[in-house]
Image 1 (cartoon, helix red, strand yellow):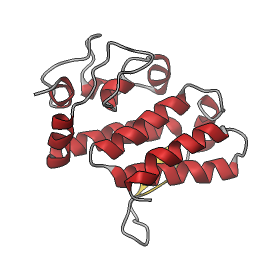
Image 2 (tube, rainbow, N blue to C red):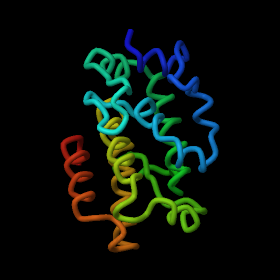
Image 3 (cartoon, rainbow, N blue to C red):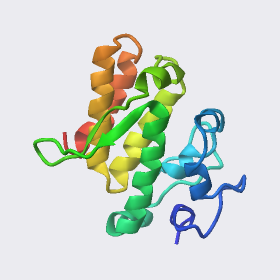
Image 4 (cartoon, helix red, strand yellow):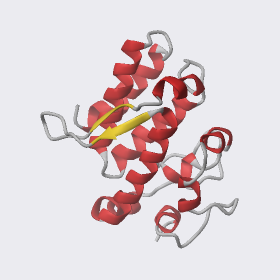
Length: 177
């Protein structure tokens, strides 16, 4: 079994001693200032440019995630933590196609200032989140988050670079758009 599966199953901890559950409880200030956890919550098959020691996920681990409702449920919890950090929430209501809906939460106006600018490192974090969700069997949530981000870009033009939007479009489009 790989490092990411073991981490998500609570069998190992992050090198700094963080468990998955511990990260889920962090306040926004720690989610913003700590830069080594996002690669563990939202793994990719490629090495992180910025935290090269972070684990990557293998195709075998991707298959395990896709086959495991428990692992996908934990991944969804990780998404909920990050959505809350960014000021978004998942609606109980589904869209016309039965897909999840993500929108701005009641505190979005206050939280947006922490991340909603074109040169903010959180844009790369969001790219990682969208990619990882798509890889690990939660593509419908990647689409819903992508749609929320595009609506936000329309509401706050100029705060997300055209390049960032193009990257997000490429990440999500092949996965069901």
